[in-house]
Image (cartoon, rainbow, N blue to C red; front, side, top):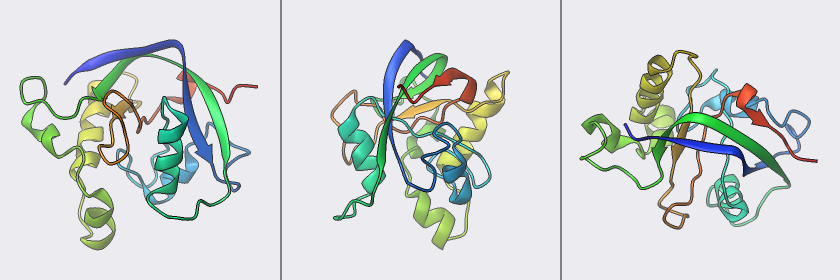
Length: 162
C-alpha cells in the first residue's frame, strides 16, 4: 500500500446537503447507505482538494444539481492510503486492483460485499487508531493527481472554515 501524508492544514472541500449541513463533520449521511470506502453504519467524510471535483462527486452524474452548501476543511493526516495515481501492481497488493469496483451495483443490487469495503477494512485493521483514512482518485471526473474520496477521522478534520 502506498502511504502518504496530507497537510498540515491542507484545504479540502465537500458539498453538504441541506439535511446534513448543520453537522458538517459527522459523516452520518455516508453511514446510511455506505459509500465507496465505508459500509453502512460507518461514518465517513468524502472530501476533495478541488471544488469542481467535490461538486462532481456530489452530483454523482445527475444533470440537475440538488441544493447544497460548499464547505472547506483544514486537514492534517499523518498516514493516508494514497490511490491518487490509481492501482500500480508494483506498489499495491493485487487486492487493490478492485478499489474502483462498481460498489453500488455490488452492494445494492447484487447484495454482496464490494471489494472496496474489504479494502477499507484492511486499512482500518492496519491502523492502531482503527479510523479509516483513504484517498482515491475517481477516473471519471478528475485530472491526474486530483484527490477525492477520503474517509477522514473526525479529530483530524477541522472545518468547515469560517
